[in-house]
Length: 239
Image (cartoon, rainbow, N blue to C red):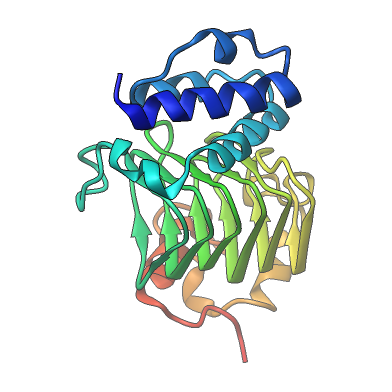
């Protein structure tokens, strides 16, 4: 086993034993690849355990161990992506795989993922202009959007200390964190766009071209149109 992974295992096990003594699988496993580690993390029993494991990994993996990283690629769909420390992405982040950042992740554009292929893990805070998510998102800190957080109805859980956005739409029961926003449409309020009066409320907030798309009933918010405008960097809010 490479020295970085030996040091990683020693550090991780010490913290797991101290903070998560019930996680026997982590205590008994000698990790030698990130792929092995991510597979075990994906089997975590609960969202709280998942986030605690992410936190442990961030704390135990030192910059000196960066040589142990593997699968780093510019093609985000070819292999899992791992980055130690903070990461800024200028533009959109569109991925269909595992994407791990141990520090803060900032995205100047829109974050777009896919279910069931994608899994995003951020040890610190996640900041983006908008998020259009149907995949699994685990953020150790806050998930903040300056514009829109649209959580697609058919997907995995989104977990963070706090989800903040100007507009939050929870199309399905997927958000496992407190929500703050100027306009918040939780699952029970939205009902996949079919709740009484919800589209009337949205038309008072959003530009007309987001409605009446090929994927929705007449007068309803179109997910395809919304994603198209978010990817284009358009201002989707009425003046």
